[in-house]
Each structure stands twice: as C-alpha cells, then as structure tokens.
Length: 255
Picture (cartoon, rainbow, N blue to C red):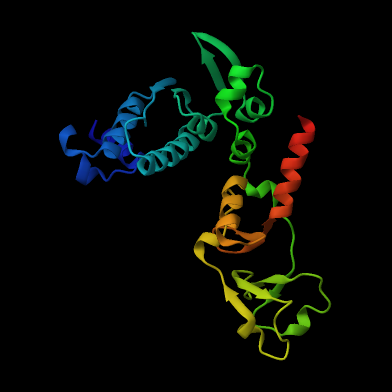
C-alpha cells in the first residue's frame, strides 16, 4: 500500500515524503484535487468517472491541473468519462465529446467535428461564437511548420546571398536557435552579430504548442512569424500568420 501511495503521489506531482501523511485540511484546493485523482486511480479501474473534478479551483490552478491530467492520461491510457460544463476544458482534454440537453445526447463526435459541423442550433450556440479559435486550440503547430531561411550566427553576410526575406532566423553551429536578424534594415558592412536580436522565451514555440497559442503570442509580440524548436532548442522551422490565415480560410470553405 505504501509503495502504491508513493507511486500515485509522484504521478500527480506531489512529493510522497511531504504529502503522504497530511490530513485533508492541510491541503490546498489544487493539492486536494490532485489527491482526488490519485484516489480514483488507486485501484487501477478500467473506466473512471470524473464529475467536474477541477470545478472548485481558481483558473490558474485549473489550467495546471488540466495539463497534469493530460500528461497522466498519456501515461495511463485509461477510458475516462469526464463531466464538465466548461466547453474549453472539454475541447482541450477530450478525444470525443457528447453534448447533452435534457438528458438526451444531441451530438457525439470528436471536438474538431463538433466545432466544424454542429448538428443543431443548441450545439452551435453551446460551442460559442469563437468556434474557429477553439478549433485552432486542437491543432499542434507541428502539423503546420514551414521551412524558412536561416543563417549561421558565427558566419558572415555572404551566407544569405540574394534573399527576399525581411528577416532570417539565426542559429549556432549545432542548429540551435539564437535569435533573428533583420535583413531589410541592417547594414551588411557591420558584423552579423551586431544585427542579431535574441529571442524571448515566450516568443519560442515547441512542436506540441497549439496554433491558437501561436496566434496569441504573435498578437502579443506584434510579429508575423514565430520559431519552433525541439527540446534541445534545435530549430525545426516557423509558423507564420499567413499560414494560420490560410488554415482558417480552408476551414471556412469546407463549411
């Protein structure tokens, strides 16, 4: 039992030495929710019912718990029936969604299909007027990475030759992203490193970042494209605002 308790506490991100002996009243709301998930998993049931498990916590804790839940589900591959009134939560976590009204299932399908083709007005309204943005939250940027010009930050301007790009991504010798170089407004008589602008952490995407997240960061930073790197910070490509517009346009044409 002690081994199983330690295993489950570690799974939900709680240090066993600190939490195994705590009483419920000694836990914060988020910690109590994590313990609730651990208790549900304790007997290793084939199917788990979770009735609004994150409904009583603040928004920031809720997002962290959702992330933790998604990570746990990737490890366990359990069948989970997850009841929620939060459509964003359902879209973020579910493989399939059943939209219910008055005890009757109106539509049962993938989040993408329900967002793209709601079967009746109630489902359409329940999904919200920002259905296009919600659909982008289901798409990882990995599927829409574009190739783009790069430059070795340790080299010289001659690497570029003639380019139509206004900026290029700057990499080191290991293909790790360093920053970007403004080609259109930089003098090639100066050293390349003097034209380098380093990237902020929030301006860099991972392959599993969503297209919605990419769009949000572009709007915040005022840029037209953002780089995508792997876990070793190696440059994979970029996702651009024009690519996102192309994606949403094709979705509207399908509808």
